[in-house]
Image 1 (cartoon, helix red, strand yellow):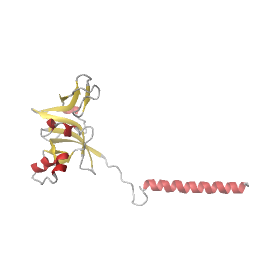
Image 2 (cartoon, one colour; image 1 turned 30 degrees about the vertical axis):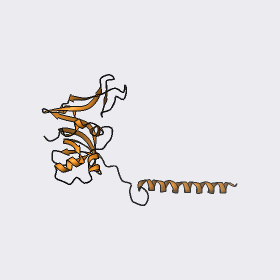
Image 3 (cartoon, rainbow, N blue to C red; image 1 turned 60 degrees about the vertical axis):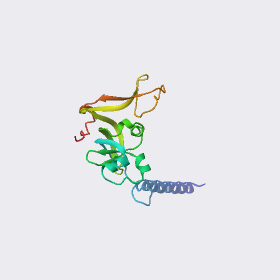
Image 4 (cartoon, rainbow, N blue to C red; image 1 turned 180 degrees about the horizontal axis):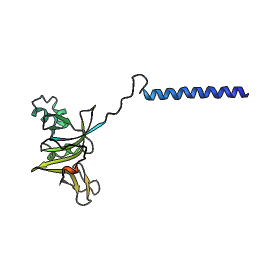
Length: 183
């Protein structure tokens, strides 16, 4: 192969690579290339909400709304806040405790939650029970292994029983970016 052919082959390869790279960059900027820009992940807000955790059906009845399908309404836990707004709970590692432990339902609580603008669901970060004017943090504790858990189950370590633990919390223990819930 002569020098000129090798040179032209190299130039063609670079041109093709440059077009591919530019097209890939344009595709990355526009999402799938057909439907406009890729959606940006909305920023999450951290909120401190006060109310009671209930099944969706119970919450809808309390605000005077039709409960709809009882199976669905009984299977979804929500926070009915003090203003009468319903916040569905995400059933993840921290929120699952409300499905498993009835003692956490129907009692005055504060929930430190994360919520995204595009979703009505709230992700529970911390749970506080309100008793005698005091804020008590809720978790589960194994006295044998001295480890904390966030739902009622056997200890993850020794497979023994765990207990509901309530510990006093001060306002200063909350993240500074979160305002205390309205009383």
